[in-house]
Length: 306
Ligand SMILES: [Zn+2]
Ligand SMILES: [Zn+2]
Figure 1 (tube, rainbow, N blue to C red):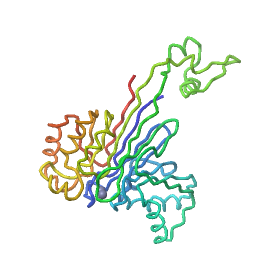
Figure 2: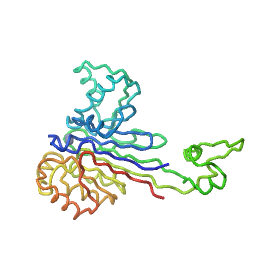
Figure 3: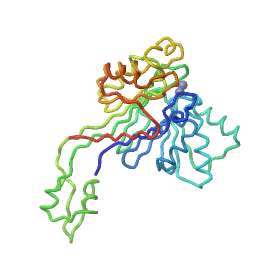
Figure 4: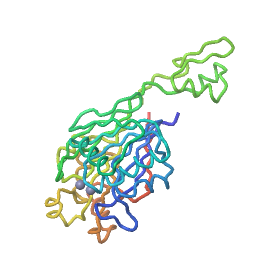
């Protein structure tokens, strides 16, 4: 079974949208799980473009500023329109419940599906057989959290040679064993342990900060992440402005990535003040070479290695 996380950037602009950049939103897919982190204006359009279904998802809000939430009501309304009944969970910082109640009242909106709302200031917000998602507080102008998405550690790896030796036909039966099920071939029972080698597979870690100023606490939470998605609102020279508006420069983000020893950094929440994006990226790379600049539609796949 492919063991990879797919991250799709649906919006990569700071608050004022740009022709080529919509407001913040990121989709994270792993096995049957879809996490949507923030829903800026127009996120639904990017979901359509990227063939992301509205059916089953968990929404993670980093904070309630409008450039991270304007797309939320649109998405919920579309679910009603298409009569989608699967329940949905919305996780966000304190005030998320109240925020939703006010929006529903203002729009006279009645969801025709179940919505569970969880507020968080830190700690585990979601755990299933595939993933653990935790939040941590970040420094921004209102209550805000970042999210850590980690795959559950695997203890085994499917060994095709063993499957062949046991004369198990390739295809559906292999898949069932890979997923941890026992199978039956003409009365012969085969357990997954017979074809799975006990090799610990590394779990994958993706960290997304949302809007944050330069904050040493982010280092601890991002330690050795496979991917760090960090606020990079301003170019390197705009340090004063970054502090004033509780955002980061791209080089702040690079410094955090370097100190946290992450594998890859994606700079996002890009404002128009980056008059020369190549310069911004080059300066970031001087500090952390594996930096890349997000753009709408950017897709990154991260694979678990043995
Ligand atoms: Zn923002
Ligand atoms: Zn903000």
